[in-house]
Length: 500
Image (cartoon, rainbow, N blue to C red; front, side):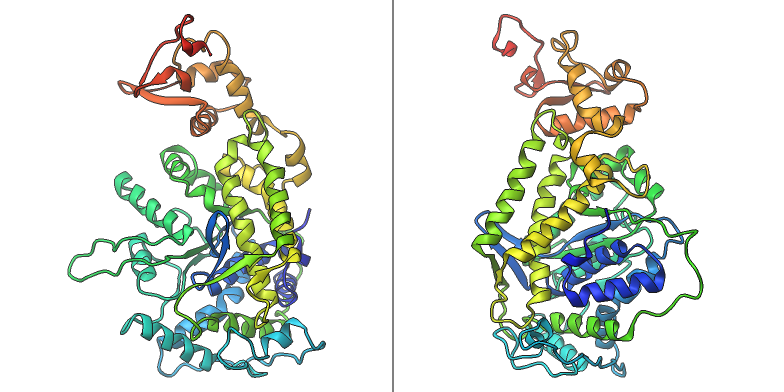
């Protein structure tokens, strides 16, 4: 089914639809990119407080599309408001356009709240949002918190170490964005270094504080509430290559893959028709104004992060969504193989609800409370993204669109059913008393599955503590978890408690 554009705030939906028409691309691509840019504008300065802790609002997004699908044409205009501000911050002579925002049509419309007095802004916004004033406010806040450090919050080409340094020297979150590749190219090829890089990046997804990274020659600042946003659009084959083999094991075992939201747009190649129109000027103007207003949020109000909370109705709706997914993570159930990703999907659902709420109620006196409608819209988006994540995290993407109904009901091919099948083989009597290799299990499962697919399924069972993984010399071995005690494999003893 198509991406639920009606879940987006009106101003964002208008920009997404206009951009999709002008580029003749799937609107879902622009919608996913826009969520990533929206998160970059507010994360680190806003967070959601729930009974389970603090959730920052940054998102990691992967849109898988082939070369020539128009990825750059879509991402460029969406990230432009942030890049214009950053370029102006680095240039003494830069000029910024002042978008004309339409007059509100209703007394309490979202745009009316945007342009009215509020408890967040230090004074009212003008009808014409002045980006120069927004930039001055951002620079003043950056100078107050990190004297002498330039404002720098958008990057397309940086090493993890450079991003970490930026995170430690910016009051804004940092957005790493690339419409081509970028997914793994900045992760070190050195396994020991790559493991450290991924650990740091994963903490930056959580908005966690970290100690100062090691530097030679000058002191580095510790990371306080570090938030990193990422928007990547690799080609399908490069993504599959990166998520298999040794690199894929590292990305999966570190939890890196599980933190992303995935989307595969429908291809428009072969259906496009020249000429291509420019996006509607009114949609672009309002989008710029809104993004710049979001960038100005919190720059003069408080140094601490502003906490949002769920209304009782929103909380009940989220709990129902949580409980809907939980039984499907049980042993042998359809989502068990991607349980680490499902847990992050639920956290991302909370983040999306907050982003939709801030986008809708910008400048409103009720901005700190996320209501039921935004939570319902976020859950609608999460349900749409569920089948893409199931396929992407499993490393199998065999087409441009996956039916959510198909994924929610029954496995559609051997890759979807692999973990229950492997589990069934593992629990057969001839494997239960002893350890085994990937090759032995691969021989027993149905044809059509690769050894790498079987290994990944076994590794997921290790994550679920059904199996244990260990080494005998150079050989990687597996056994039932109940047979792995005191750090070593203990053969099955029919008369002992291992039989339980």
